[in-house]
Amino acid sequence: MTMENKFASRLKILRMSHRMTQDQVANYLGASRQAIANYEHGKRECGIDSLIMLSDLFGVTVDYLVGHSDEKN
Image (cartoon, rainbow, N blue to C red):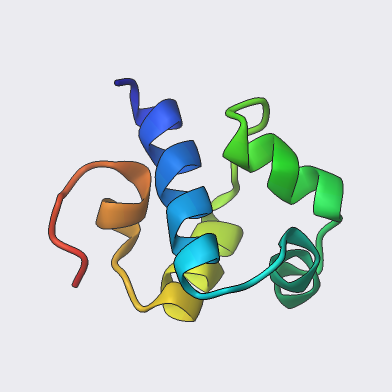
């Protein structure tokens, strides 16, 4: 699995495990729902600021989120 696919998969799994909608995550990031959908489908890359915000939101490290580590924190 590529890093982009790991990020897409982990983002969706984390969002769903936190019972959040794409709209809720988008609002938190100041992005559109479509941007979140594109991240989750590997069609768009996420910027560093958004990666940091997502890691804070879900309580995981950026390394975990992007697939560099299997340890969440």
